[in-house]
Image 1: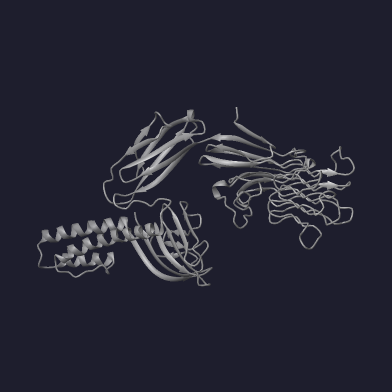
Image 2: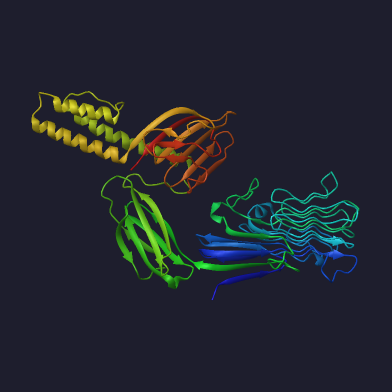
Length: 521
C-alpha cells in the first residue's frame, strides 16, 4: 500500500519530514469568495488551480505546507486578497522555510504552489487560479482584473498599482466591505479598480524546474527540481479542481536507500546507511580506488566505522555504495591522502589558501628530489626547470663519460621513477589571460584536465573576485562586497572543465584572470 500524506486547511503552518525517496507532490488552491446575488450554482466563482510534480529527495527533508482557505469565509490566509465575504481563495504551497505564511524568506523558498481563485461581487466572474497563470476577473465597467503570472502580479486599472497583486499575495481592495480580493498564488491576482466591486483575478501556480523563473533572493537549489510537471487552471475538467478550501497531497512513489558519511581521514571513516523502508536494504560495499575492500550484509542501518591503509601520498578515493532489493543504490565518494586531506564544508578562506599552498609544496618537493639526484653528477638544475627539462638533464647525466654504468643506471632509475610519479599524480599550470563572451570557445588550453583551480579575476567594473574549485567544494568570494559562497556542489556556480583545460562561467565570467591549475592524480 502506497504511503500517502494528506493536508487540509488548518489556518496555520503544517510540516512533514520525508525520508529520501521519489515522491509526487500535489497542491490544490482554494476557491474565491462571492458577495451579492446568491451563487449557489457555483457558476461565478473563481476556482483554485492544481499543480503537481515528481521529485527525488536524496536526504531527509523537512517541508512546510500552507493550505489556502475558501474566500467565502472572509479570512485571507496564505496570500489571498481580503474582501468581506468575497476574499480571494488562498494559495496552497509547499516550501523549505517555515514561519508565518507571509514571511519573505518562506515565500522565497516555495517549490510548488497552486493558485487560489479570485473573489467576485455582483454577478461577475472571479478569475480561476493557476496553473501557469491566473485567469481574468470580469467587471461590468470594463475594469478587468488580471491574474498573476510566473513573473509578476496581476494588474488592475488604477495606474498607481494599488489594485495590483504581487509576489506571494493577492490584491486587497481599499474598501473590502464592498469589493473582492485577488486570488493568492506564486504571484497574486489583482482586483479591478477602486470603487468597483467586481471579479478579481486568480493567483498563479508554480513548480520549480530547471527552466522555471527564479526571482532575486530565491533559495531552493537544483536538488529540488521537479519533473513530470502538471499545471492546470482551476475549473478545468481534465483535472478535478478544488471547489472550497485548498488541500495538498504527497505520495511516495519509490523507496530509496541513502547514506551519510559523518567523518573521515587518512585511516578511518564513519558513516550511516538508511532507507525509506529499512527492510529493503541488502548490502553495503566499500571501495578504495574502485577496488572492492569489504561487503557488509548485517546490521545495515547501524552507524559504522571502517579502517583502511593508504600505501602512498597520492590522492585516493573512498567509495561507499548502499544497495536495496530492487538494485537501487546510493553512493558517496570522498578523496583521501596521507598528507593532503580534503577541506570540510565550513572551511575558511585561510584554510583554503593553506591547502593550495600544501598542494604546491608537494609538487615542489617532487621536483627537488630530481634536482638532488642530478646534483650528484654536478649537473645544474633548478625549480624553474619544467619536468621535461629535468628529464633532458637526466639524459645528460646518462651520457656523461665520467660515471660508472651502474651509477648512471641507479640515477636514471631513481629520477625516472620520480618523474613518472609526478607525471601521473601532479601537473601544474599558471598564468594571466583576459576572458570575454566568445573568447576561448574550446576553453583555455593548458595541456591537461585540472582537478584544482585557484584564480582571481577583475571584471569590467573593477570588482575583484577570488575563486577555488576542487573535487570536493567550490568557493566564490567578492573582495568588493564581501559576498561569498562555499558549496560542496562545485558545478553549482562553477566553471566548465575540458580535457585540455577549462572555461570560466558563472557570476564573474568576463574579466582579467590570474590562475593556478593543478592536476592531482
